[in-house]
Length: 547
Ligand code: ATP
Image 1 (cartoon, helix red, strand yellow):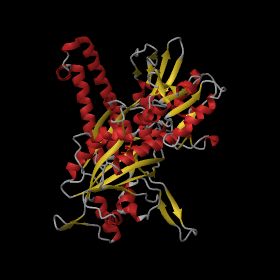
Image 2 (tube, helix red, strand yellow):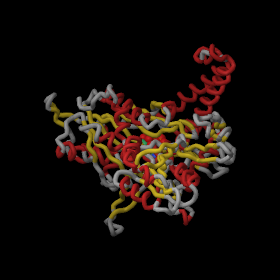
Image 3 (cartoon, protein in one colour):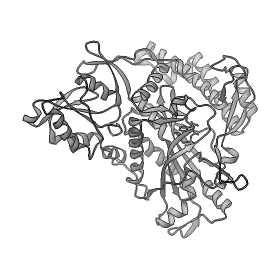
Image 4 (tube, protein in one colour):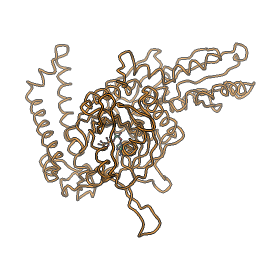
């Protein structure tokens, strides 16, 4: 699959010539395995109920993971509810009246096409097998282009090359034909055609290597359970597969009690559950996960303008973290969900390729209209400026907390060779998201240094998550903090009492500064305050959502 190509990171010699990135020629699969192992070893993510050998695609967040996750949620929540006076939050229950899911279309249409390989007995999503095949053509094209770029140097014209080179033209034509056929089959819900594509493309099972496929079938992804004590009176209910419906059924409650005027948004963070057919890639595809969703209610006819607005705003939110602008791209949907009239994904470059982290959807007035129909209640908004009532249209931004977590981890992880033959693993986490902002260390465990270190820590801990460490050599303590991504290590030494200063050591550059104790708070605040990021997002050109 996309895993096979080699991960060629350049050897980078950084300023002080102290370290090199060492994962030369490491395959993406190897890198990813190391990230997963690192997440477990350093208390970020554990397999759920591990002592019983775990549960497929369910994970627990450890002591560092929960801090990172909470920081991601805080960054998202505040960017919605603080930066926009017309966006408010709610926290709806996971259990909802079962008719909700009839009205939303999930009972009838929340399906994935599945296919089994008879030899390996492994189950796959038919659409994902085909998407991976399209990605293979993309890789072939990209490889040819790169080869040619090296050959022709400065004078290389990529568009010209793509339109004239016979081999590349052939790959492009095959890719386009496959893409078109796939999009049509998905739109028509044509399961036989999906199977035929898999056969025609000679797609093999990655485990058995054979093409012994079953027919493609639809599989509903919702988990159900029963509510009520007696078998007769029990009601079949679902674990919500998305948080959005909790917002739609509360539209009137929030609009009326908050006296909200269109356009306005409702934001929510919460758990969602999907019985995914194929659980792979660690926390990328889980059966229990968390979503951060915002539904923005607008006038009919204005939805595409707002769709564009939210696309740009959300991309800025991602880029402000500084994980690398080139790691993001939009991917417009070929197959629109039953409720949408425009949809795009924000994809992030994971070690296993560009993958969806967030969806932005123009959901029309489908959900509110459908809930009105099924509930028999009038769900409309009276627009005083137009002097008319209507069912608002909706733009949704929907991002998975866990996928965001994974993208942050993947871009932060780095192995470095240090001068003198030593190595370190460092997480270059954005300081705003780092689980621990600073670690306070007495140089030695005596001479009153631990007491001074604790005194400093006690001052800082009201505002920042800080740690204290006095065990082992300073070098080892630095390594431990690098591995969890702590931006600052603060060392108290024998001069501290005399000069009122400590040594601050920076995670990424490993350089050190002697600073006054009273300046510590501001140094940490400046680096870790989300406000700095919000300024980047809002900028000068911020187009307000209060139009
Ligand atoms: P995919 O195509 O990968 O199955 P989707 O298009 O079904 O995802 P949406 O329904 O748009 O996803 O959900 C919004 C967001 O919720 C996704 O962008 C993703 O970040 C997150 N998400 C969806 N399913 C999962 C899952 N099984 N595990 C973790 N996060 C998920």
